[in-house]
Image (tube, rainbow, N blue to C red; front, side, top):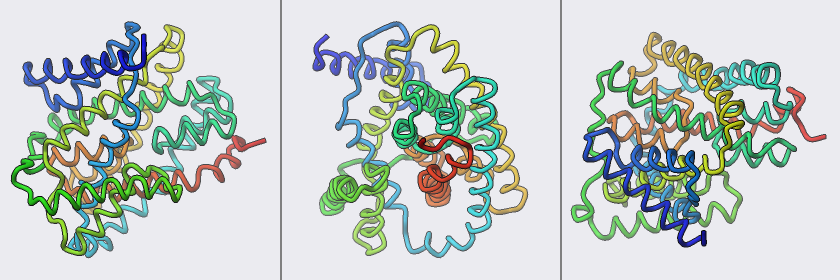
Length: 344
């Protein structure tokens, strides 16, 4: 099938997923509808294809949303987060100590693939790092896609059933209620941050670049609101679609070996995350919902969406995820050598 038709088919299936989830009254239809529909279509062999730069551009919306939440009040709260943030390096170290032996001894992955499969960094970053070190790109893609898929699916259930969160917090004001000058500044933050971040080699440029520029605008008092709800819904649509598309071409053998291995590892991750969240809660470092979301090992974009709809302290949650990702990205090459997974 020609690329354009594959793109159109993918967008249509994702839109159908939104409609079905909306009509059934299921939570987060713009995120879970496309994710579920594209996942099912991919597994039955539909020739889906991601929307490339359009999907990347959608992530800039979440970067701006996070940046807009960085206010002087948040900066004053940073010292209060110090104790909880200090646990993040310990959390990452334990994940590596559990994950690498699991993938090498139980799943029989080679050392490089095992190390980068275990690291809870960004999906694209870990695949790129692993590929450069000689790891198996297909395995890394499936393991990390499975991690994100399961966490994003289970987290809302736990939030609603365990913590009583309604997931009905307004995700943003309507487009028509936001001043034009602020909309223009948000668009500028998205574009300048994204492309400027790529130019200087910033990892996760599509989210972190816009976040940095929007934070500057927010701290300067130029923007006072998140992007409009229509934009955030569009971001959810493309993110959900992207997760499902990762499973295009998966074979029965890969489902049995790689995806099941990734699923088993997510259970181990969830236990570690629950333990650290409980420590944070019992120590009084953060409320339950914030602690849960801060240590949930999902993707940064997906956790941003959940923090918004849960009405959680976005600054607290994202600060922890940024710390985790930065530590993994910067420390992975050094730690890989320790675990015998460095370049040879």
